[in-house]
Length: 154
Image (cartoon, rainbow, N blue to C red; front, side):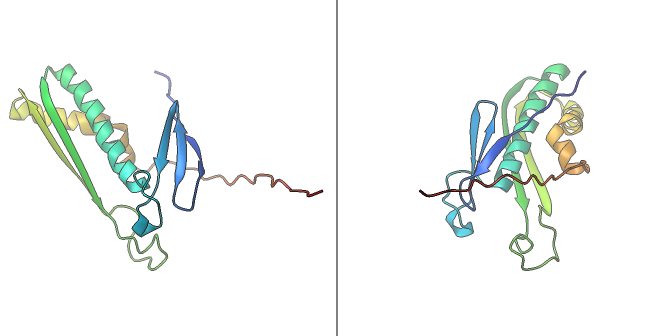
């Protein structure tokens, strides 16, 4: 199967707000006022947690169908803790990212305990976001110098 390519493109609206486009969707990323934003959207780390939960949801339903599991209801809660000291330039003692991410996966199903374990293993194995979080991913960070418009007054 060929690779699928996903991308977003966006611009800074303020020092704390970024608006991205993904297909036909607009994604507003902002910080709460305590972190310098206007609270017009979730912040970047909240979007990361939400994207993980969303990915688990998709893969859980896909694999449940394959395994013959009827999912009556599914709740997913994802928590992460991070120390903001590196982000704010106060210390390099802790990493900038999450120290720990915890998933609470709460389905109501007809699956046995043994089948549930097989299901969870399949979800963790096949969820792309899970893979990106637990495995190093090659990353390029390219600086592109944009031309500055020069305003000329008459």
